[in-house]
Image (cartoon, rainbow, N blue to C red):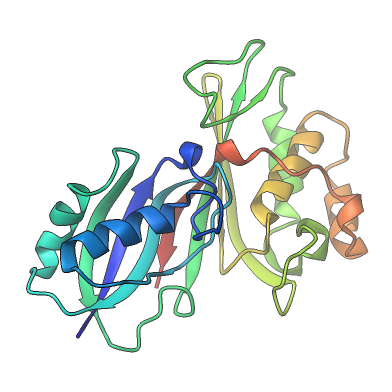
Length: 244
């Protein structure tokens, strides 16, 4: 019995998130079907992150245990022949028997894309949050500084979050613009439910001049979701990398 760790890249536009669901198609179900068609046994994978409906990934990680004669290096090639074009296995390796994709995570990097232009782009409609008002990136960066470090992020999690503690550590928030596309790269040791999207929604209001950058500190201290900005749309979010 081998324990395989795989990295998968996917376009989440056509899926109701990663985690398998009763009445909707999720990425997990598509992957499990592909593996089962190869090994002829029922398989359940363990994922590092449960991305929401419409959210994308460049580096989602999962593991599963299997008895198969297929060489580990050949698993991505074999699986990709069974998967749709919007889900691609990019790596596979054998790991220790006790490896767990979710519980052994060290830190994660999420990327969020904003298309900042007067008119939306048909090419970014599924991959970025369109904002027609000009965003002030200096204000956005100033507001982001207050989120760096170990903090209580109660104000930045949605109702229904079942995390045992709201304490998370943000190592960095990098914000860059190239032409009309703005990218926020958020690196942390873990994230609460919708935390990244609420951070983005709050920083957008800062960049629009509707929230003072220093007020981000007050939002954190309030530990009250209603004090933060809106939850940014799912399509701009990408799970970029998971480190172990």
